[in-house]
Amino acid sequence: MFVCLIAASAAAQTPQTIPFSAAQPVLNTYLKTLPPALKPDGEPTAAAWDVWARSNDQEIRARVERGEEDTLTNLLRLGVTYTKEERISYAYLLRFGHDSYVDSLAGKRADNLIRALAAPHPSEGMTDMRNFLQKQGFDVNTPAGRAKLKTYMLADLARMRDEVMHAQKEIYEKKGANLSQQFKDRGISTDSNLYPDYMIDLHLRNMIAKSLLKPDGIHRVAIVGPGLDFVNKNEGSDFYPPQTTQPFAVIDTLARLNLADPNAVEVTTFDISSRVNKHLARARAQAAAGKWYTIQLLSSPSDQWSQDYATGFLEYWQKLGSEIGKPAPKISVPQAASGIWNRAVAIRPDVVLHVTPIDMNVVFQTISLPADKQFDLIIGTNIFVYYASLEQSLARANLGTMIRPGGFLISNEQLPNTAPSPLTDSLQTSVTVSPSDTEYMYTYARQK
Image (cartoon, rainbow, N blue to C red; front, side, top):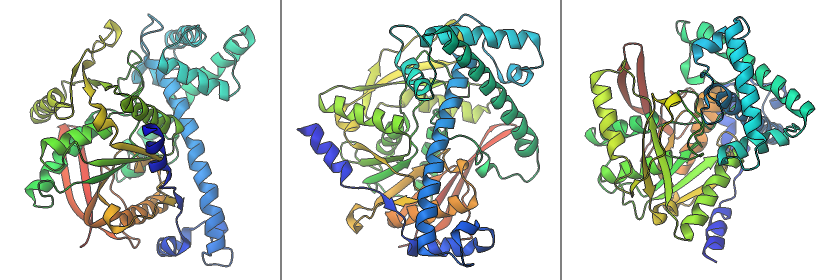
């Protein structure tokens, strides 16, 4: 009965396509570059918007499948549970197809991974990948099916190589490139890590110092794209089960900074990945039965980090979870992934039950909230980077309608401010991670 009530509560907030009246000011800002389908007579129309928004929502959701392909490719590159072969680093990746050693290595890892996927009782992460492949029409149980799958895996490895090479040339090495849109043509990946969560912690501290936030001032939070980490692209591995960390890291930080009561703050997640939403729904159901949610807190410290960043992150990592849970047995890091640090924390069931997933595309869908249910804070990290300017502007305007006056959107992407929006640019936090890497976090405020 309790689980049914949880589901009913989430279902009560059914997302709808953003009304044309709300989207029109943004569309008019981009009038010259709008696709013809949106302006059949030279101007955007309500009918055209409805058709175009629904169609593009489906296109964006299809990019999640491409992101799943990236997860599978990262599993091929970095997994350590199914093979003793050397991992395929980015340096090796760039040599794939041009180096006999790397080609042989990739082939062996693919064979080993396929055997693991075909095993009778695969791990949770392997099961997710096998289910994904079965939906794509691959059969891991026949010689022909395995041969077809190996060809597919190696072709995807080559695609990732080409994307990395293109990004280096056209984005990272190109002066003036817009890093806030660097993945607009890629699949949407659900992978995550702790570094944005640490930046959120630092940024909230900065907001407190600038008197933007007050004690116990946060009651309702939304997180766009909370992530489901499994073999992330930056030194990830497959020795831990898929997990979502950001909702709980945010609650923990809010509690530590005296911004929210961890026993009362309500967190809503917006995601278009069925895997993410089902994972959170399952965690809630288990919490309703009294089960704690355990997360592995993985990090890969670098000797390139500045002293301040290394010291601050280590302190954050050691305390993470202490406000909302207790230390838990960690999964040992295999020797092949020895550069990864790990500790684990179990999150209290009552905290898990305060996190509600909603399937919603914030670019094209919205929920109508009464004033007393609007969010004090919306967070989106490493998510708007998958969209171009028009989509980012639509998301900014849409999220602004769900934030209470005096509330904030914070993101590590710099969103365009050319289109009308309830949000105004506010505070920026910058942190030097290494000589070649400065990370940013931005505040967008809804005026009172």
